[in-house]
Image (cartoon, rainbow over all chains, first blue to last red; front, side, top):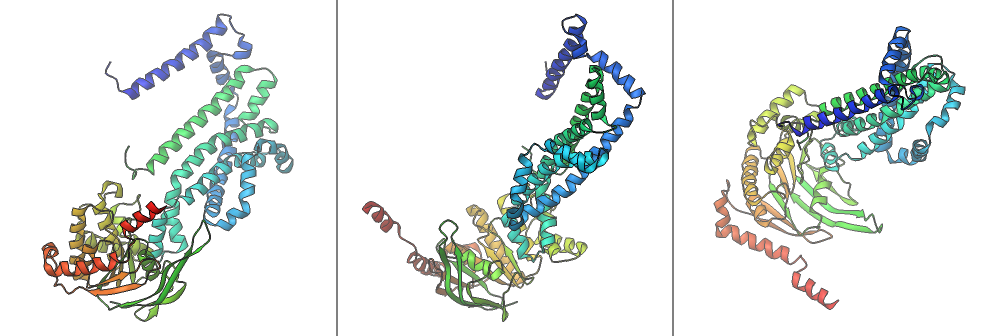
Length: 254
Length: 267
């Protein structure tokens, strides 16, 4: 074998994946487990085809919309809050307990309240996504702002830089890798927000579909929803990683 | 061109751990005539860098003042530029965009900044490296970028804080010659902090020797050596005479090792 270590790794991981899928398909067929509970890849494909033919797209569109708007809001306000709290010691002292408290609290516990306040429409889901995604972004950006090189700050000041110039030329570039790390964490939390929000109270969305299917014991459909969400999370994380790399070309190669 | 007058300057800082007030510089006075190259030497911790920071307007004095061309320093200014001890380059910017950084902050038009930076990069001997990133450069090359970034703003006063401290001996000598050559071309008033005595004698018109902490002026030693100064000058008797004089002045300030050892033995 003359394959590189990287392709060897790829081969091994796809092999394990294939074996697991085959087992999942074969065990119910051989009668070892009950497909009513475990479903199987072929049943899931059937269920997916059935669902897509009957308007699953609309559920996906609703969930994507909620996710996108909530995430956008979290990025904009998360960066803003991170920069302000990272830069101004006074603001940090004022709001530090809130950040710690909200970050430590299981925020899904707030969802019933949010649904009471904002209703069962899109607003409560956006809030759920926002609550999940805001803190990882704000906290990582805050940490990023504090790592700005003091020598570079001194240099900028010696050339009479204004606060805005310092922000644009030093703080922002320093924060970029932190922002991407924060968004990476935020994607998973935001998806939790969408799904739980939709499960608790909604009229559409992938989470709603999963909830409907599970209360009527349609395991295959539940799996379709779970796989959709997992795939979406994986693709988005990989895309973020790729875009993040584009900002890092100046770093020395390891 | 601009002259410097430092009038009974005192600078202190609070020690973070104990909250004690430490006096870094006390009642320091000296003046520098316009267009002169002046080196500041002294034992480490005597407040050389602090002094430079105050002249740069990056740190306020506790009392006294610094006058530049008769005007008191109240903050950083465009007529000054600083060359830092660490190269302090923006790692995500290439050489050209690092050299234009100071101009950019001062509001210079992008096209004009690029043109001036290109010329300055050639002057410091980095032509062809405009697109390189800082991590691809050697220590000496990074310090040249650091120097070019300061020079390109055409300051009347150039402040240099041990710019060659982290370079090896050969690179140090090369950079000393470069600085001397460039200064003869540009002619701005220059304040150069170093702890290397031979470096001070090689570069300066005048060397200011500071006392150990709190820093005051111990002596001002003129260096009447002809320019341009080749490195062979370092072997001449005249050079050694100034070097020896400075060494004696500084050694009288530093805590000699034998006495420190005997104190340790006593404990």
